[in-house]
Image 1 (cartoon, rainbow, N blue to C red):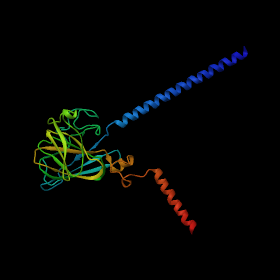
Image 2: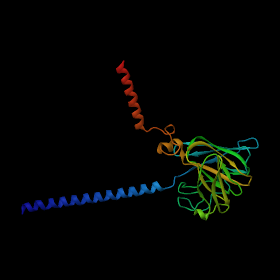
Image 3: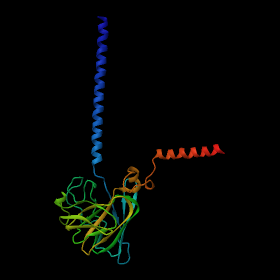
Image 4: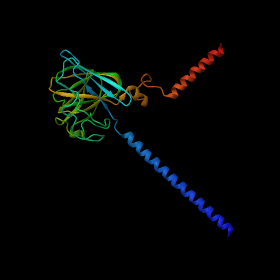
Length: 281
C-alpha cells in the first residue's frame, strides 16, 4: 500500500510532464508554421516604392526647364534633377489634381500604377507635364536600383528611352486594371535601333521599370502633344539594394557594402601577411 501511494503520484507527475512537453512542442510547431507562412507571404509581396517629392520651381532662367526633388529611402536621401531644354507644359510640385487615381493600391489591385513589382502608387499630386518633343534627362545624386517611371495620359505621344525597360502595368481591362484619370489605354514597347520606345493606344496611364543600378536615364518625347506627364520612384539606393541582393542584375562588389564577417576575414588575412613578413625578416 505504501509503495502504491508513492508510485501513483510519480506516475501522475511523469504523465503531466509528458503532456506539458507535448503541448509545448505542439505550440512550437504551430509557431514555426505561422512564421513560415508569414515569411512566404512577405516574400511574395510587392516592393514598396520610394517616390520623388518634387519641390521648388523652374531652375532654368531661359526657355528650357529644370526642377529638383528628393527621394527619401529607409536610410538615404537622393536628390533628383530633371532637365528639359525644350521646356514643359506645367510643373505641379504641390496641390492640384491627383492624376494617379483610378483603382486601388496593392499587388493584384486594379490601379494602373500598381503591380506585383509596385505596391504603392505615387502618394501625392506631384507631376511634370510635357508638351514638346525632344531630349530630356533625369539625374540622381547617387546610384539607385530598379527605378520605376509612372506616366499619365500618353495620348498621341511616345517616349524613346536610352535603356531597356519592362512595362509593369497600364490602365486597361486587357491588363486587369481600372482606367486612368483621362481614360483607358494600352501600352507596349518597341525597339528601334538603340532606342527603347514606350508607345500605346488611346489614353495610356501606367508604370514601367528600368532594371539595374545607375544614376541617370534619358529619353526623347517623340512628338508635340499637350499634355502627358510623369514622376519617378526607386526601389532603393544601389548600395542598400546590392548589400541585400548582391547577385541581382547591376550589383557588383564595388557597389555593395562588405558584411562584418567579410571585413573580419580581410583583417585576419592582412594580419597573417604581416606576421609572415616579420618572420622572414
